[in-house]
Image (cartoon, rainbow, N blue to C red):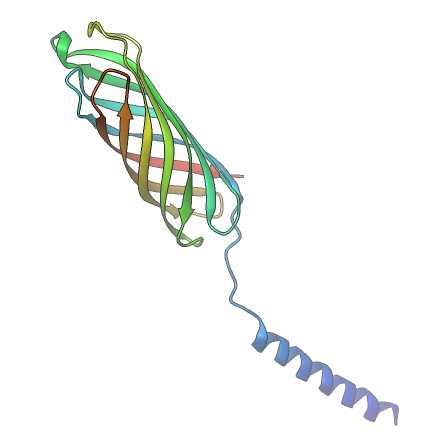
Length: 180
């Protein structure tokens, strides 16, 4: 008699396990929610003082939930100052914003927006440039494993300054990040 009861209970357990497996959802990759990385690229400014630059710097993200991440970027730039016979100068830029991840798997496309800052630190331009603006962005991260990603980012920086026209800057960077 005990063998019959054990066999019946075992059958119910197996049936319950099969039902639970059928009802379970799809598995999702579990990535860390913070990253820090390096970015480098090219920026083209629509300004009669500065033509172009090479931004190099640090970036980081912090995952909130439902595909939203906070972002932070800090760049040093080598820029070409047009009004000073195309000499090279140093500038700093950065931004703080949010981005939305459409997918959270190995391929992670996103759109975002941030508040950006740009300052020319040296050069014979005569004017000290301090721009503040809004920057829509788009790009994707390709996860090279659970802790590393690589991907391009494109954004348009819409800078303004008192007593100056609106200035647009097109920026393309490649970002490599480590997640922890």
